[in-house]
Length: 291
Ligand code: C2E
Ligand code: MG
Ligand code: MG
Ligand code: MG
Image (cartoon, rainbow, N blue to C red; front, side, top):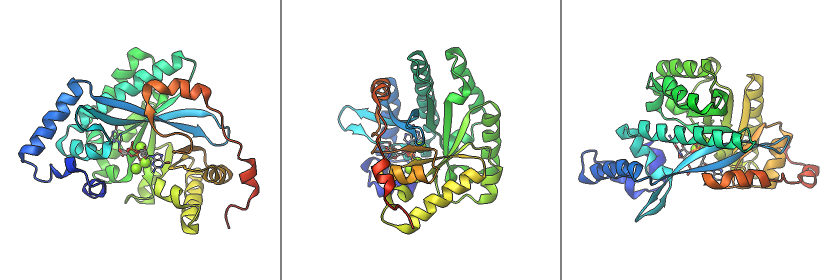
């Protein structure tokens, strides 16, 4: 996490390098207050079936509407939340919001699958599966309406314990996805054992594939690998119509990215989904897209 957070050069993050510092303590206090004062916001980014053009789900992405700092992106407080253990409270908040939204969408006639990001600390929590089930039951939201996204590194921190939680979650009917696939350290041996349903190709490969043949080949091989293992595959970082056409032609199941839509406040999502029209990629399809 440190490397990831350092990339964004966050002032907030640097505060916690000195774990006992005054600043770090005050950030923790501030995060607690943020939850109490209702300053966290759920944004949703659509996931589209690239073959049929339909909206099939959304990823829940948290932001912090800070009274002084404005809208704070997740990379400026998620790594800190992970280090301090605050992430469990945050994950519970996100899961509850996503579940409520899945209910709302069902009531509006939209069957959506809500993807939620989980961290290592969540996977170490043996009670997590029961907690999620208890959250969904009163809403009558089927478990398959939730997809839990986990990065390879979160799994590899303690593979055996992660595997046990994931097996439990899978047996309860939740969908599981490997996020940022291709950037972590998991081995194919683990991938084979994990009860996952979906691979999410990291956006770095997808965003580069139009200009870099190696990235294009990685994307193509990952789609094949996923399908050969019986998994569904999602491309994140879909930024152009050409990327859409390439991915669709390579058989990629779903896409998510700025070309379709940036993450939007949850309240706007249903109206957005109801007015969504898939692009016409036929002109792009005609070109030769990959060697
Ligand atoms: P992620 O789970 O890989 O989420 C995808 C990130 O890529 C999001 O950034 C999204 O806005 C961004 N993205 C999507 N499409 C495009 C595109 O076409 N181009 C570009 N340049 N970016 C795109 P965001 O919302 O800033 O979140 C960053 C990361 O923060 C997430 O990466 C995830 O690791 C973490 N995160 C966000 N919300 C939560 C949460 O509720 N819990 C946990 N544990 N982590 C979260
Ligand atoms: Mg994700
Ligand atoms: Mg990702
Ligand atoms: Mg990412």
